[in-house]
Length: 446
Image (cartoon, rainbow, N blue to C red; front, side):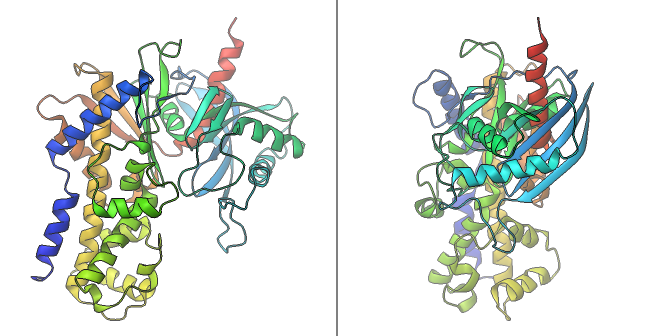
């Protein structure tokens, strides 16, 4: 271990986010919020959702389309009021075929083909439904410019999606056309388009009056919040910040290297430092550097270490959960996934240490952005707040929840605001149905 201690210490210094650095990031993020709201230059897009918080009394049967990550889900959701929610039926299918037989994220796939795929899942979800058209809320988890609650234009793809003919288009119109091609235009009525962060906040707020921040920590990363100051000519409204695009950050050479060969260099810089899609790739970049400069594993760059994005968040999760004396799970991983039959303990320890550095930094940077939103919303720390979180990174990465909560407490210093961080599962799914219900309630008002 003596040989690797100075190497790991040097990397630790690069990835460490001190309380002072968290405060600095929080202040820069808060400045970006103010600039974005004032329509000044900002890496935060501050997009209006055209939705306020739900009352919690919305009722009825609604359809939810959740599109934005590994799987597409369509659900029938029953809202009973007083925070009561039941998912009656769910249809799900991966956006990429597990056997490689299809992949709707690729550039050669057209907008029509992608939205026909979505319409086919909707058709399956409403099979057997009779009566009035069922109203649909659509969670579309990509940077979009909302024209109103039912129409949104994709600004640009994220999470390595490249499907042709969608950027710059109204995704609400594309879905409506696909439903018509499927013969569903008289049975399904799309009424709302939201971001997954908005959906997560709506889901928590349906039963928690303190919920005012929603965030995704999964394949991608983004945060929204309730803006109480009247903007865009409206009253209190949920604002989708597209916070994954924030760029006033302490980058390392590994961050810059990853960004250079990513789909959109220069964009989504925070997301590339913290989200599930990228944390494994950051570790791979670090390992390549150690292989080249320090002779880690004594091998040339090959196999899984030579393939971009071959190391996933799930791999880091396995390494971090290995608490055996000899790190036997990591040894088994090296054998099965990297075809390495012999490894030393210090080499296995290095794998786990790099994962800890990247995951800890992710939690602390995200906590700094939450602190910025809390300071913006409640500068005198007078109110209670709930941060609703959805996503596999927060839910499943060992130690992530604890690291995030500790970082948030640490960053607040001696004058903490009362805040709960709460896992809100399936928020992007159920939230779409709640959005449809909120729109329907509006329409019934005299």
